Image 1 (cartoon, rainbow, N blue to C red):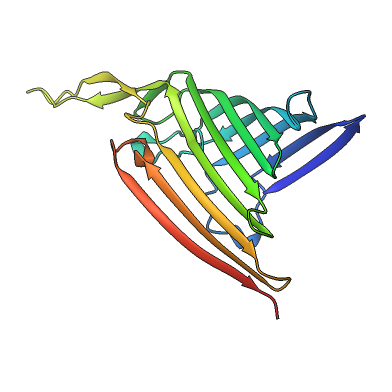
Image 2 (cartoon, rainbow, N blue to C red):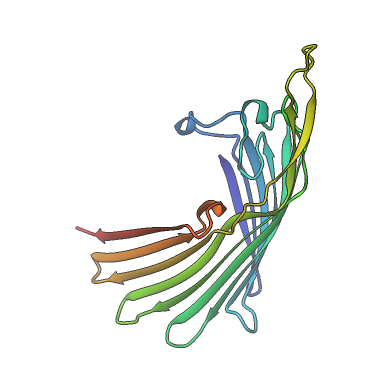
Length: 239
């Protein structure tokens, strides 16, 4: 995609602007779907506060063509000839403590609306509210040149919203087919939470090792009490 950003410094604060258009793709992404595209504009303001070492406020908007919240329909359930419009806000906070300890928190909330699709069994989509958050605790130099990180996060999730779908009935004895409209709730049944532990150690200028564990509860918001775990071990060696 095509994107650009700019930054302005205002005393001890920073003001950033950003824009991205996914419609412009290089030949590397020839397999990308040409029926969907998005344009995202954002602005953020960062400053050191009285109680936090860094406070960042974020706001922006996104316009998608042929999809909604990066989700595409197909065939009779496609978002044909329609665009969705999302407005979002967010906040990032960082607080440093003694003994190389720091806490970070970030959260976003958004509102999305969409034009009524054409040539689709999706009749309309009600306004959608969505959110995400993450909280992490970081400790540096527990021994020497190492870092331990604990985190808990909720991936992007729909909090409220529904869509109306046209469902064909069985044909009557004259061959006529009637339709009914069914309201489909878009809110997932459960809430996914990701728990992470990451330990990184720099042994010397040439060798770095890391071990990371991620545990997901209620994976993909649809499986109650389901637990998926992933363990990764990685390293970097310079010759």
